[in-house]
Length: 219
Image 1 (cartoon, rainbow, N blue to C red):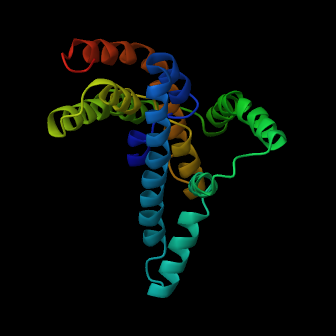
Image 2: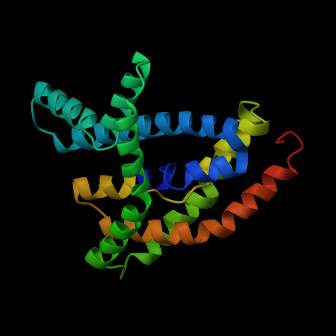
């Protein structure tokens, strides 16, 4: 539930939304935050879960299992690999770039189909009440916390403030479902939260944009 409440749909929905709302400057900020956001949240959550699962094992076994499962992760490992490749400055061959672009274009429809399959698989009976609570916290409480800490705590304003608040206000992403499936916990609730928060996001986003526009220094 903690991952579901804090991990937004920063790629499939967040990237095109940031590009449309804030242009290239905002998109650059969003992409940088997305990489750090995934790396920190998923790594920390994996470490905590793996340590709990390894309870009773030797310290060496715990450390080995924790490090391995934290790094070899369907989200963390690609982020680390991408960052490492970027540091080399080599770029991509046009053919490889075209293939990756084609694969990337299939991400959104495939995710939508798989979320629908997950709904059919796990069912939603008994999951809507907690899912609605998590969705409300994700769409209202988290962005309010981000706004308060960023603007009044750190003095962030203008475009950076708008980018991080909208990023915090995004609906639940698919990575919490991957995390739930990996450890076989609350899969149905997470799936329901993805659907509920995505539908409600149409309304809540308008509210956050209006609030940001009303802030004198939000730009």
